[in-house]
Every structure is written in C-alpha cells, then in structure tokens.
Image 1 (cartoon, rainbow, N blue to C red):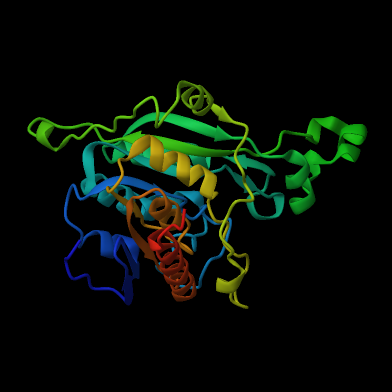
Image 2: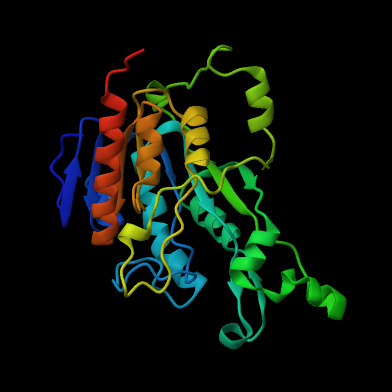
Length: 300
C-alpha cells in the first residue's frame, strides 16, 4: 500500500507496514478490498489493561461498552477485506467476579464477538477450539473452580479450564463483486491429506502455546497486566489455510508484531496497527528482525 496514512508513527519494510495509532481511524484511510486475510487477537473487554489511553478498546467498564467500540473495527474490517475471504479472531471467554459483578462465573465474550461481526455483514462460518492445560491455568490464576481441594470440599463450585477460540468469519461476495473473488488453492505436495485431517479437527489439541514472541521488552511499569500474544503456531496455520503467498494480511491490534512475524515467515505481506507506542516499537524491531532473517541467502 502506497497511500500516505495519518498516524502517530509508522515503520515499513519490503513486505510490511506498521502504524502507531487508533486502529479504526487508520483502517478508514486504507482502500476497500485491499486485505486478503485479517487475523488478530482483540482486547479481551475489561480483562487486561494495555494502556491508559481513552482510545484503547480494553479500557471499558463492561463487555457491552467494549462491543460498542469494537463494532467500528468490525465494520472497517468488512470494507477492507476482499470478497470471499476470511477474518480470523482469536478470543476466550471473560471472567465475572463476585466483588465486581455480584456473581462469579463466565461471560460469553465469544458470543459478543460473533453477534457484532454478523451485525456488520460477516458470516460466522466456523471456529477452532484451542485446547489449554487446566493445570497450567490453575497455577497461573489459582482459580477455585480448578482446585482439587475444591472438588473434595464442594465440587458444585468446580468447573472446566477455559479454552481459547479462533472464530472464522467469511465475507461473502455481493452482486457485482464476483470479479474480486480469488480462491486459495493447495496442492497435495504443499498440503498433504494427513495435515488437513489434523487441522480440520474442531479442537486443536497440539497447539504450541509457548511459541510466542517475547513481550517483556515492551512492558512498562504502568502496565497492570502485559499482553498475551497469539501463538505463532496458530498464526502459521491461519496464514496457510486462508491466504496465498504474496497476499496482504492485516492485524488491527498488532501488539508486538506476532501476526506480522508469522505472515512474513510464510511469504505473506503484512499491515499492522498498534495503539501503544512501546508495543509499536517492539513490533517494528521484531518485523525488521524477521525480514532480515527471511531475506538472508541460504548456504545449502
């Protein structure tokens, strides 16, 4: 994309562009039907505090208020995406606490995202459930529902570990848009049957959740909780499944550049947007580094 974008800061390489600013304002400046795949992990409503900016969609007091702001992003994503292509959204449910909400439990944040996307024109097409280890979750959160001592004491308070999801939304071509549709084919050599049978499973049991970029360098003292980057393993699968080499992928919540790194490693082009300056700078560093690695000549 050669359009000059008004933003707080910008960086680019041969196959990538990264913008620092409000994702909705920046997406409004991008040309329609210019994105072949959107993939990202949005702020999980009021679960994490990424920044103190009023433009941060995570700085809300309820899931309903998050949905109001997120709607503008879903609308722009629909306009930007090529007809017939995919928007892949990584998410998980959110927690309700007795002190803050009156009752402890879960909120259907996944359902909120589905409803907003469908109201903005997207078709909820599929989803992948990412298996997570309840033992690891218990150690991180010490949530009573996962404690074995709670099972022995009163198992009516016990419950399952919280999985993650990748929601798949499709933009169907409208009348007159058929010429913009471009398939994503695969050969048997590139994509063996055995691989498809594994990836077609509704539950991905073999995701490498620890295969992520380091976010510690981007963390600031004022952060309440640092961001949780999307697994590079998941990004790789989404790139291969839903885009062709050389095509343009977008992450409006670019973070430290996880989606960009995965896209470049798979021979795709990348456009990322990130509101927080420290995350933007870390994304710039990560994208420059992976570009140097992918452009280096091989000795053998």
